[in-house]
Amino acid sequence: MSHTATENARSSRWPARLWVVRHGQSAGNVARDAAHAEGMHRIDLDIRDVDVPLSDLGQRQAQALGRWFADGAEDERPDVILCSPYVRARETARLFRDAGGAPPQEPICGDERLREKEFGILDGLTTAGILASEPQQAEFRRLLGKFYHRPPGGESWCDVIFRLRSLLDTVSLHYHGRRVLIVAHQVVVLCLRYIIENLSEEEILAIDAQGDVANCSVTEYAFDPAFGREGGLTLVRYNATAPVAEDPAAHVTSEPDAMVGARG
Image (cartoon, rainbow, N blue to C red; front, side):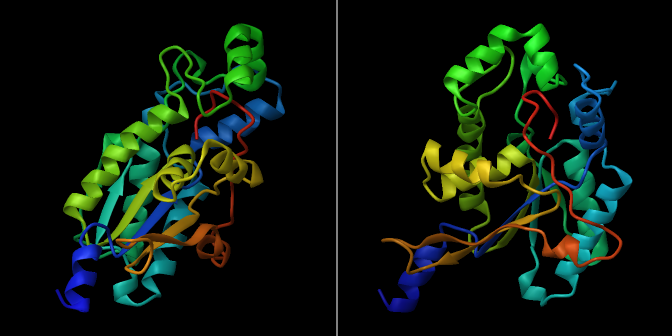
């Protein structure tokens, strides 16, 4: 097999480019900040987490990200868009595409494996609320850590990783050699890094501790045929906020992970 044929065979396993984007600021993020600032036990939302929309700022962030991609070369834009089925992620993907980030006819493919981490009985509670109403779960989380703690009816990070391994198998099977954009949530961004880069629990939690995944930030991978024995995805940038920061219509926001059951 020639060198070129070997490279093609290797690259067929992975996308040529992979971008992972956290959704824009949501109404849930705004309500979460307010609940934390006021010492409330519960976030003031009366709709399902699935249905929480973008805030006005979140909409501008998604449009700014789309315009940033639109200003680049055509072969530097995604030709596949996958997103969480949650409203805030779908709105981010649609506004990104409509602002020129991808061709207008490009379908937005929802995939439930990209959904937010499920918090179960802790959903909507602030840290103060968990300590007040679920002290046993607060102690379990302290002992086990966020990577392994699974609240009743919810998920651990390991559970999220399990479904994301399946998602990446689908990406490898159907979108090899393509330019793929994923729009999802903070924990999904981090767990995809864990899988793609073969990180340990300690390594991914150290990355998490360094700072939040900003709304509409970009984490980017490129296929490198010389990486490892068979080629693979290499990290180009993580949590890059320049696409939003450079646009006067939007500014960077991120949400701290202070509330265990908060919606991100």
